Amino acid sequence: MLEFMQQLINGLSLGAIYALIALGYTMVYGIIKLINFAHGEIMMVGAYVGFFSISVFGSHIIVAMLFAMIACAILGVIIEKIAYRPLRGATRIAALITAIGVSLFLQYTTVFFLSPQQRIFPQTAFQTKDYLIAGLSISNKDVFIFVSALILMAILQFIIRKTRTGKAMRAVSLDRDAAVLMGISVDRTISITFAIGSSLAAAAGIMVGIYYSTINPLMGILPGLKAFVAAVLGGIGIVPGAMVGGFLIGILETLVSGYGNSLYRDAVVFGVLILILLVKPTGIFGKNTGEKV
Image 1: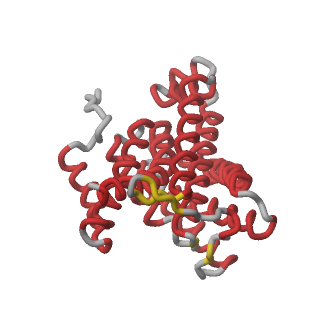
Image 2 (image 1 turned 90 degrees about the vertical axis):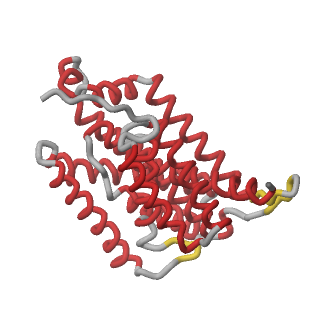
């Protein structure tokens, strides 16, 4: 039982990271029906911004996270305006291919300027300590990641439910044409959505640096894909679903590593994606809706 609880604690911190990345996927899809496969690379850029903020300027981890979130919010808006906005009326496959192109562009631009070598995330920014509580080993980094993610999720929910910007986002998601008639700026709302989603991915990038202690230009590929699985599991386009899906994937991954073989954890996660698409394509919180033709 103790071992199960230990894996559960480990899974919550990992799941919090996946949930933050999944939120960006699900927000963008909910607004413009685009799977932004460059989202994992935005997370990677956030990790590098945090790395240089700490190693060059000696920033505190919270300050580094804020720097990364601001930088990636700006990057997300730029990507949306340059790469996605001109294709808004194009086919979905064109937008999807563009997203993959943006992903590769960010990866190899980082490789070109910063080299492909792996970098050790500065340990001075976050001194890791382990505490033994009721037979369970709990690390302060797990607590930091979990609590930080919950705070960011709570802020996101407040923005979506209680602010004018959130109401505009929900209106555009529900009916873009009606939103325009009500005086809502669709372009501005989409840009804000990209900014918020990208800033959450940047925070996740810092958390990945703390969790694994290393960063590299290709670090966004697997976490990005797993976060996409989490978004599909919860119900793509549904914000609470992305949160729940992220935690479930994180817990599943740590359970497979703890009770089986860590080599199979990625296969199990993507196997879950196939199972979801076969059994309930709309995800846990999704509903089947008829489409008028």
